[in-house]
Amino acid sequence: QKEVEQNSGPLSVPEGAIASLNCTYSDRGSQSFFWYRQYSGKSPELIMFIYSNGDKEDGRFTAQLNKASQYVSLLIRDSQPSDSATYLCAAWEPSGGGADGLTFGKGTHLIIQP
Amino acid sequence: DAGVIQSPRHEVTEMGQEVTLRCKPISGHNSLFWYRQTMMRGLELLIYFNNNVPIDDSGMPEDRFSAKMPNASFSTLKIQPSEPRDSAVYFCASMVDPGKWGNEQFFGPGTRLTVL
Image 1 (spheres, rainbow over the protein chains, first blue to last red):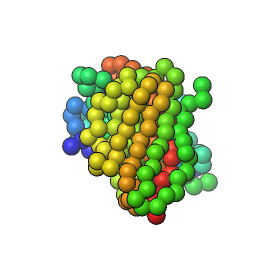
Image 2: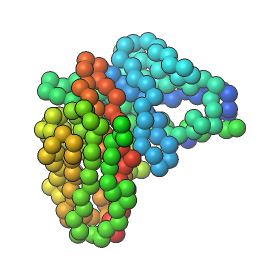
Image 3: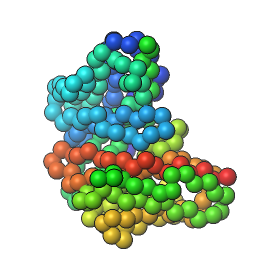
Image 4: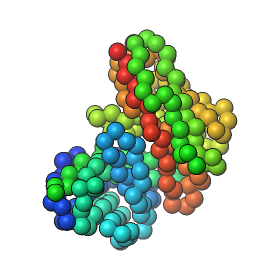
């Protein structure tokens, strides 16, 4: 069974610091990894996704992937109070016959302290 | 585009009643997903459709759950009979073709279901 593990938190980070969110996955067939942000009472929204080993940067966000260690992370630089949310890590494995759903972790609750 | 549309946004019902959740995907998206989110289990995939055809319903918890997609612009998730443990937020999401590396899934606002 595919599993994606995340520390549930809460992870408390002071404003302006770097927030580091981590995720591990069990299925080596997973090819791509997605980071979604979910505010309380809202639906998940995509921040970024990564499929190659190494780092991928988008503004204040950097995703890191290490397929050998089955490890994914998301760094948020210059953290803002508006970054306070639950961050969901998801793994995607291609199938032969159509689109697959994502396997989500339970999320890490991030709190940015002003 | 209005995004993924779900109705109702909130549903309160009594145990044993039938519940029908509705979803309109983004126009042009050919994959549709139903997820359920609870504090205990997180976000779980129930079923997904590709080009209106159910591809994998292994996440559907029991025979009480059924889903249909009669056309490209409409899908329903039905629970009959409903039970208190079905209380959760149900999300519908849609996506264009996944391509080689997957693609963004766009989530609707969700339906918060409470079964008394």
